[in-house]
Length: 60
Picture (cartoon, rainbow, N blue to C red):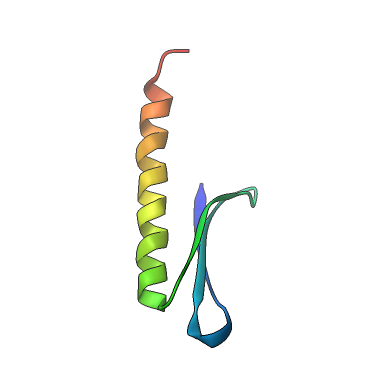
């Protein structure tokens, strides 16, 4: 399970992160607008979910 977090920092900058349900940061970044931060966070979440599917199909 993953969670997307957006936090406004100083001077209108936005920090984003994608965290696991245990609180570990899987991806993070900073953007100049909230819309850009939301887009990048959701893009990172999509990429994480995409790679998770392939990892579960790999033989052990």
